[in-house]
Image 1 (tube, chains in turn red, green):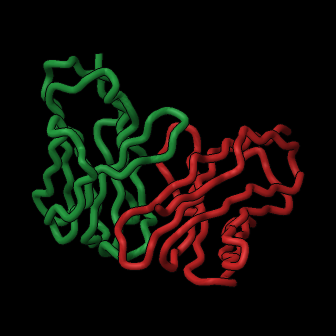
Image 2 (spheres, each protein chain N blue to C red):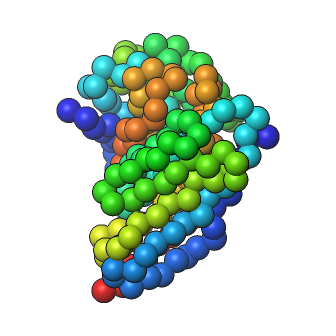
Length: 112
Length: 113
């Protein structure tokens, strides 16, 4: 079946450090890929997306590239801030389907 | 208005109570969703409404009853819940059932005692 695997957290970094959160997927079709962020006590927000191979999604300094050859969609940011502390979910959506498949989430804490 | 609004934000109910969760959006979206999120877990899809008709029910127990009275409103009626149903219930909407799911509400944190 379709699935998403994220690196286990929690991840703790210092401010201005480089961030990578790994995400790999298994899918039978041609998925669209997403990163969502959930700040404490809130719902999910769409952070970025990519709908086909080699697409790069970007938003708020975060980037992720859809790599079909490695079935990956790793999230990166060059310089993290304390305000980036949140839980990050990688997700996929099979074309024509209505159901998002989420990874387990990675809790990120940024220390000043 | 680019918000999905959920009420109440917190709810404590007994196992014999009947309560309802409410979700509203005024973005003209025609697909609306209920997700359940347990602590430290990803959201799990419960129901999808597309053009006010139930299109997906992920084998959710009948003690959860969804309703979509109009295109802006989605309810989740709760009856005879169990303590293990305690979770964050998230509503979401999208332009249609194939569009990117970009808008989630802040959720209702439900505790069943």
